[in-house]
Image 1: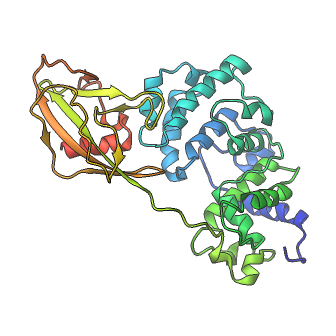
Image 2 (image 1 turned 45 degrees about the vertical axis):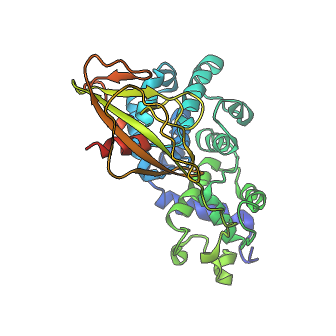
Image 3 (image 1 turned 180 degrees about the vertical axis):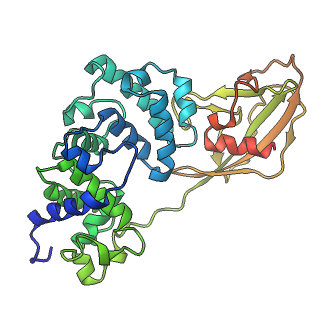
Length: 354
């Protein structure tokens, strides 16, 4: 850190900037309202943080609005049907989050009387809440001095302190810097301020250093290295897997669907019957069709990228009679089925039928 600005002065500088430039977000209490005594709803903070894991703010806004309109508090969510929640979550990806969302809501109701605990360790014991989410809830919802370290904050810390150790090895050092900067005064607003700084000013490409409130103390700006940071260890290429899915439509318009097992990828979500997904170096698996029919391959294929692999699916399609009995899955009438209830990869398969 350059000596002309002490560490203790950095949080007040950033908070002054935040008071004017804070993003308006549907789960956020604006800084002036918070200073006037309005407190954030821990349920809304928790829900937003879970949704924002690996997902952009722009995508999350609409999902958050729909969720909170349908389930306005943690008790309402805890009482929801699993299938309804999974359907609302469809398209957000990382579906284990939705399963843990329900588990956590039910634990808060059963173990904490329907109120999130204002205790970092107690939050960590709830399903699906890890160190980052516990810190975010503790700081933003309860104004406790816990440092948050998401991708935006990592980038800001790496640049302010000109840290060249590549991620993920740099995480402990970046966290230590974030902890040292977290103030006792207004820690919740500070946590949101440093995330906003990374999201709007200290961006991955072409950071707007000229209007940054921390431009003077920023070591990377002084060294001309800001655009190079944070450094990252090169990732290995993602493997490719492939498989087959079967889309059967009955003559009355009903579609054959199945609910995937709770555990595993897309667990608990609606989907099309199909084969396992195997490495692309192996023969493409067809699996066992869910019913006897005149199956026809559709032109093209589904391509989708998950966190750890790319997937390519062949789509087999058939139209069947009203009395057809499937080996697995069940027919869902057109008035009960919406493609938007499907996870993205399954919706892509449906789109090929059109």
